[in-house]
Image: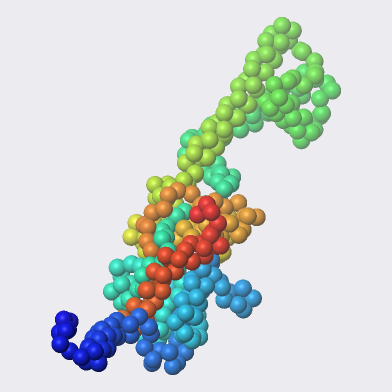
Length: 374
């Protein structure tokens, strides 16, 4: 505004005041949008939560976790009041937000297209994604070894070897009953003695001390029998070792490419379940990461697919269990707070989240729960 020099000082002062008031009036709508409306300040908000360590945890009746701490800091700065309402699954939490039963969903809620069609999200505050949890003691069970031996044809050879041992035991029994007067006279005792002699040669390659009834011919026969025993042990040992080595290599789960044909655990109504279903993986649903990890260690599943933050925190706080997180992050996503469509909380919460990120408050929370290596 250009003021004429002909105006009196009092008039120029009034003009300046009017200009200032006009600027304040123009900025008032923007300032109003930065704060929650009075209708939300006058009542307690309903905050929906789903337990998902380390983002939402219930420790002896006290709620804590990364998501909880971030929400409480932001809500405190906005002078909001609230009560928590628990939901058993992410799907139930999203449904509640979509239907307006809650004012905000607080947990590690992934921003997905399907959810964005039903609810709104604040500014994302955490980078996530899926990873794989496996046992650090991956190996082959006895059942796996038997299956591998059968598929390789070794069990049929073992059956043939067993028949040969049985035949050798019978022949040895008949021979000693005829030529050795000191051999047990009862068939039961004689058969047991012969079986012991045959297995001693087969497993140790050593002859049982005894008489040689056929001179040099007998010695040659004994030598051949020793060679057969050594070859038998070598064959059995090498076949079992080869099968176990193959199983050790094929049973290792190190990446997403190793999951087809395996059974994986997922958390009910989670992004991990959506991925397993879309990828055509065979999966089982569990309510908590603890239940899923127990199924893994008990052999019920071969791996667990879940959010990387959830898996890393679980391994970090359960060092007594032989668990490890393997492979790179796949299906990367971001976590945000969920809101009913048209919520007046979206802008003030987003601004506070951006402020917390710029002030490194969110990074401090990440370090508190995950440490430096995450």
